[in-house]
Structure formats: C-alpha cells, structure tokens
Image (cartoon, rainbow, N blue to C red; front, side, top):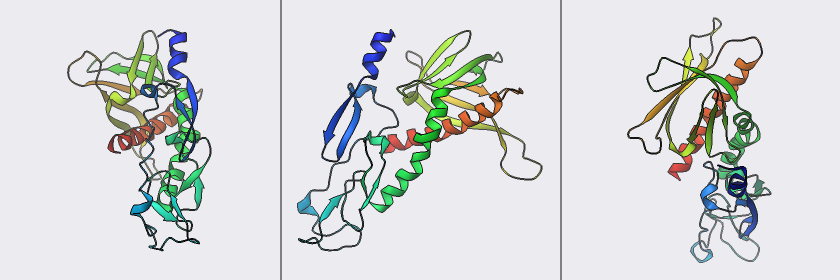
Length: 234
C-alpha cells in the first residue's frame, strides 16, 4: 500500500451526533477493530421512568440517555461524564454508572497499552509447525487494523482475522505469584488460504531491556484480544 493510499485510508473527519462530537474515519471500513457503534437511544415515549431507580420523569426530573448503552436515566443515575474512545468521542460523554465503570476500566488500554502495541517489541517468530524462527519486530499499525511483523521478511495480519490468542508462560517465581509470560500463540485466517494459520512469538533473553518491553507488549496484546472479542459480541 502506497503512503498516499495509506494516508487516505487513515484520514479522519469531525462529525456531530446526538451524543456529541466524534472524530471518525472518513471511510467506515477503515475504523478501529476495537471500536463500538453508537447505540440506538431508547425512545423518550418508551421511558416514562428512570431505567435504574424508577424515578418518574417530569418538569424537574429530566431524562438523559447514556451514550454507551442508549438507555434512559435520571440525572442522578446518569450524571457522570467519562471518556469513551471506543466510540471516538472527542470529549467525555454522559454515561450511566454501570457503563462509566466499564469505560474507566478500558481507559488504561487506550491510554497506555495501545501505545505499547503501536511502539512494538522484538520476538523470535515462527509460523505453523516450523522449527525455524526469525527475529522480528511486532507492532500494531497506526490505524490499529493490522499486526505488522518486520524482519528479513514482512508479514501483515488483519487484527479482525485473529481467532485465538494464548499467552505462553513458564515456571513460577520462588516466592510465589504468577508465572512469567514468555511468548504468545496466535491463530488467524489468512486471505486465500484454507483453514487456520498459526504463529508463535517468543520473547528473547538479553540485557538491553527488550525482554521487559516484549513482556509489556504481550500483556497489551492479551488485553487487545479481549476487547476485540467483546466487540464481536456487541
């Protein structure tokens, strides 16, 4: 893909929806796989009462719609304004308590772990059942749609085609605690190929901090997979 075509694919525009301002891709097909569509609001005529506390709406008790779930609440039950990057909102938007909790939990991924995935890390990479491995830098593309692997060869895997992710671990620390992540196994469908393909990422051992970076990348990719599967279930 040429840089000019890539720039057009990554182009974004500012739009105003009933929920607020959003910075969305100019071409919907190039949206982030971690994104969520705006929900349909429950029609005003169908919610005479708050869907959380059952307070009756009147001149003093106004109704508000949660921007994440679209349900109708009173101000007390839907007064929090929380960032919602999965729907591309520019500013924090009104959400009910349950949705605000979920959005806050997701904030770490978008604020920290997504940056780790975009920066990339170095792994030993093997495809299928091959015993040969290649040192490659693995990173997420800027539009978040592809997993890029660069070494002596180059590979691109569409994130939405990843069907399974398994973190590989070894041993347990002497003092207890979680096992150490050493790599990751990915299953994915490749265009034009039958069945499911597989690749294995293994973090190398060195004294230059790349092992720590690789471990952080693995944790971030595991979180990304959870969000990806959640998006498919929406």
